[in-house]
Length: 458
Image (tube, rainbow, N blue to C red; front, side):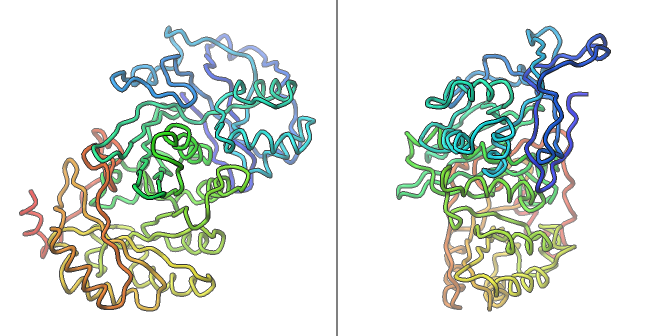
């Protein structure tokens, strides 16, 4: 068995990880385990989740260094144990630092006999001061004994850098290997203005099976932990701040449905917002959803971060087809929920995302229906061009028709923007992330009235 994992509950303390490269054999499994780090934990530090971590060889990039783009690490990260040089370790189980909120980190530091001030100094070195520490050697200025305790009891990295791909427009797609060998993708979108955005993933794959989305072809492999989400933003700042400027915005629009992983997403945003760390503004962190209504209600109650709703259709018939989640939470319920919940939010606008699919959702009637649907909801609308990918059924709407659609919405009083694709030549644009593999989620039956449009796209 490669890994055994228990999901953390919302208020549980951090993911504990064993040391890298723990090689198990029948003989070692029969020995009694003796380690100074397996002492009973204080009650405040339970329950905990445990996982086995595999070690990548030294070919894997270390703290904020770019790997050779011509070197594939797949062969390395697919090994576990065996004769590949991975050794054994008896150091005991380690806590994953980036899986903790500041309050949790402070309690953990105190549980080891150190002052709260040491927790703040550590937090600043993990997330602030331009250090973004990925190992104990980068903790300059901290107490020597404290650093020793951290090296023995804590793990700094949740992700291993695999590759950075640069698109023609300067967009960067960053591939990370997870401890179980799965791969996620993160995108950094630079801008000529002071706005630079990191698009983070919240799951490996996605269960929503939106028909226009390449990630949806993967199905859902697993949720990402809070640490795995946060570290995408840390790596983005660490790797690219010197090239593109400060990373100012975070969008949860990478792989996955964020609100299906709401506990870890909320925890990750809490860590990103802390004013002594990454210090993102709540209005500059946007969490997107396909429309999971119960989780959407919870998000609006518990978070001040921005919300984006992927709408993409103006009738239930079309949305049932291209976004199967609509069969459970239809357009009427989704929009009514927003109207109800936004009454309690001051100066707050939801962002509607609308991917335009030629012959499917881009008619003049669709524009008029969309304007009517969002009446009474404080909102902005982003019109997005569909980004083609392998096996796609759809075509992008022409620029001329997108402009006409936009103008109709604007004339109806909507705040509306046309968003250009970024990074599409390297499969880094919206709806292009991931690697579905041989086993893919099913394509759904095309409604009769759209079959001609689909035949044109083939």
